[in-house]
Amino acid sequence: MSRYVDELMADVVAKNPGEPEFHQAVREVAESVELALERHPEYRKEKILERIIEPERVIIFRVPWVDDRGEIQVNRGYRVEMNSAIGPYKGGLRFHPTVYLGLLKFLAFEQVFKNALTTLPLGGGKGGANFDPKGKSDAEVMRFCQSFMTELQRHIGQFTDVPAGDIGVGSREIGYLFGQYKRIRNEFTGVLTGKGVDWGGSLIRPEATGYGAVYFAEEMLETRGETLEGKVCLVSGSGNVAQYTVEKLLDYGAKPITLSDSNGFIHDPAGIDREKLAFVMELKNVKRGRIREYAERFPGVTYVEADPKADHNPLWDIPADCAFPSATQNEINGKDAANLLNNGVYVVSEGANMPSTPDAVDQFLSAGILYGPGKAANAGGVATSGLEMSQNALRLAWTREEVDARLHSIMKAIHKTVRETAEDYGQPGNYVLGANIAGFVKVAEAMLDQGVV
Ligand code: NDP
Image (cartoon, rainbow, N blue to C red; front, side):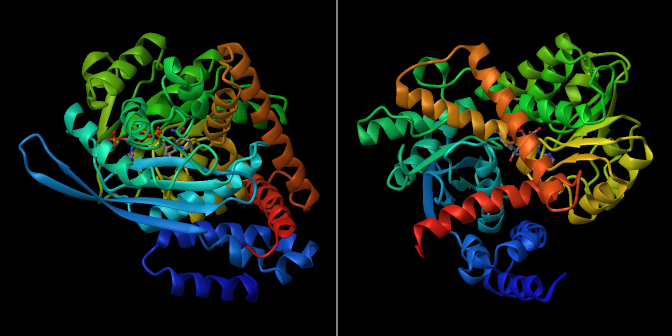
């Protein structure tokens, strides 16, 4: 690491104590964009990197609500408005007990570069609360969402900041949040994306992140004259991203064999087919059950309980061709990466945000596999949110085929840009470097144009 990045990181750690995920995300970008800083001395002079790592605004607020027993609960809500150089802040809301400021700053920071890659005019942000929707009644989730939006509504708007879903925020939560925004502001606008299709949502938005991660994998494979057909695939998570990753893998004739949740994972050597996927969707989206039930329902399936003390996740130790981590950050550590490589995996397309630790990323890069980092591979979700914003602005709704075609061409364009940038900077095949530099340069140029703001 150069002295410049060393000093920058020392400053980041000192100014943002106790936020390891944010440090990790900044370090990766800082190391990748050094070559761009050398090529563009004006970025160094104008302190672009120093400015980009400082959120434009952070909002932290109290979210009080009353549970079903009549007891008052207090959660903490956040919105990190990271960068608006190329468009209104855009990024999801996460409701999960692990949410704290550092986690959202890492997600907002990643979002800035990802959104720049989508080809759409979107700035970067992220928000959420340390609220756990798991085990709560619908009425409790509604009261929480209403209280959360009662404060958040002051800070967002269709031209300012347009949140969407993320972990723990699906169509139910977006509905409650939108309802409260509309009630308080007395206006019907596209202030959130991921809305229901009958009230301003876009077709394909629920599918977009998972579909996009598969399109990206297909593009990477094409560079070696291969396709996904017949490939054995490991998928983690069983939420929105994982479900539609499996669906699109089936469209391409691949064979997904795993899914997980925070309690454990299932391994189905016969493959997760459409009927089994329908069972998972009902289990997770309607019954809100656990993935263990899959193994109870279908023969020949192994369920492995998660062991928080283990130094690796046995899901990543199953022989396969491709891996689609689609649960959460840092779910693939160095040992998992080594296991994946030893077991034949040579395509990793990240549906989740930063699912691989720096050690894991280094191993993927040294092995020269087709490794698509989340910033590029999962950008289909926010890109389709951008398409939802366009449809809202036009007061039109595009067909399923039209949105899917746009999503597909955006993923192809992202792949092309990232690949060409990596080549241009002398590191062909390094999608991490390509994604970080391409996203950074676009935002940096806009910041230069707009002066010191
Ligand atoms: P969901 O809430 O729909 O699903 C999350 C899945 O991951 C669940 O199966 C959940 O299990 C599991 N999971 C969550 N946290 C943990 C944890 N700490 N340890 C183990 N498993 C965990 O979220 P999404 O599918 O929307 O998001 C998944 C990932 O994709 C996240 O990293 C998100 O940031 C990223 N992403 C999502 C986009 C979107 O459009 N939704 C866009 C781009 C990225 P359990 O139910 O037990 O908690």
